Structure formats: structure tokens, C-alpha cells
Image 1 (spheres, rainbow, N blue to C red):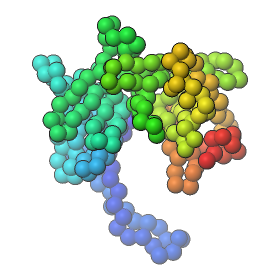
Image 2 (image 1 turned 90 degrees about the vertical axis):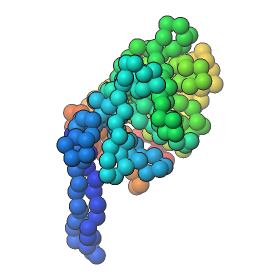
Image 3 (image 1 turned 60 degrees about the horizontal axis):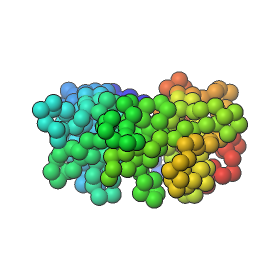
Length: 271
């Protein structure tokens, strides 16, 4: 998980006319001291369609309107409050719903109109329910299906209507070794996934993804690992993105931000 002390907004003041001239930026830092953020350790950021910036921290969820912050914390006497204050992930859905993954409280569905949370948590009564572990990743794919990484070794489909989770193992195609669940995923146009995890970077082909989605009995996803670049075995990955130039970047807790050379990727990954 990437942790940031407060968060910073950049604004362009002046840009040189030639490429050789530098850009100049104004930098504004927002933190607990100047805007009342619930904690200075920021775990995730997401922008909704109304222009609110949602800021996840290790002690509460914050809604920032550019001037002030409203904080949402767990209240043991209110079942419609957020289930846990340690925020891992935030997803803004197309209908405006805010989905929040937490460390010890499962997944929360926030209704901005009512400002109430619905909780999806571990329960022995629910068949195929949640494992009792942190929600490291919560995402929605191109077909509208929800995916979650719960703990280090539980990745799969989440059904909000049933409150159920169908986990699947991820195994290395070459060795058969089980890989950790992704902390972050990029979905390509063909429906394949590129996952960043504590055991490195790997690609899950689209046919594997579709086979799992269509077959409730499938319990293993086969992945191709992308291990070596910059002369290192890159592990402890918490982020992966694809930029406007179609370059892939990862963040490693060991080595910081790194670009993945395209020659290390199979043709099926490069779009």
C-alpha cells in the first residue's frame, strides 16, 4: 500500500514556450493541520463526478471540496456509519456510489444522497462470504463486474446483491507456484489483467479471466510473471498504471517508481 503524508495539489503558473524551458508550478499541501484532514497518512484518493475529492487515510474517510473537509468515521452505535476507519481503497462508481475497502471492516457502499454506508463483511452465515482479512483492492471491470483482493491470497468476483465473494488462486504458468493477490490491476482492452502484487508483476490473459467469470467451478487463474527489470527482481508492488504513451509504470516499496521495459512484456500485454 502506498502511503502519503498529506496530499499535494500542483497548479501550473507558467510554462516555457520551448521544450528546453522549465515548467513552474505552485504547490499547495493539504493536511490535518490546515484543512482538518482526519490523518496525515493518506492511503488513497478518488475524484467523483460532483468534483469532490475523496481521501482515504488510516483514520477515516474524508470528502474535500477544495476548501473544507468532511470526515466519516466508524461509530459503534450507528450501523449506517463506515465499518472501519483504516481505508485501503476507494472506487467511484458510474452512478455516483462510493465503494470503500477497509482493513478490518470489509467493503462499504456509500450513498452520497443519504450519506449512509451499507456494509459487506465477513459472516459465517453467508455461503461464499468474505474472508476475514483486509480489502487491498476493489475494482470494477469493463463489463461491470466487481473484483476484490482480500488479504494476500484471495482474489475474485464480488456480488453486491448476494454479498458473496468467489475467490480464486493465481498461479505462475511456468512454475505452478501460487502468487499473491494483486494490490492494483490494469485492465486492457482485450479484458486481460496486469496485476501488481507483493510477489511482483504478472499478466492474466483474457481467456483466463473470461473462463473464471463464466465457470463458478474454476478455482485457479494462470498468470505470466514479469519479474526482471533494472537488474532486480521487483517485488512488493503496490501500484501499476499505464500512461498516455502506453508505457507501464509500477511502484515498489523497495525501489519506488519504475518504468517496465516493453521488451520484457509479451505481445499480448502491449496494446
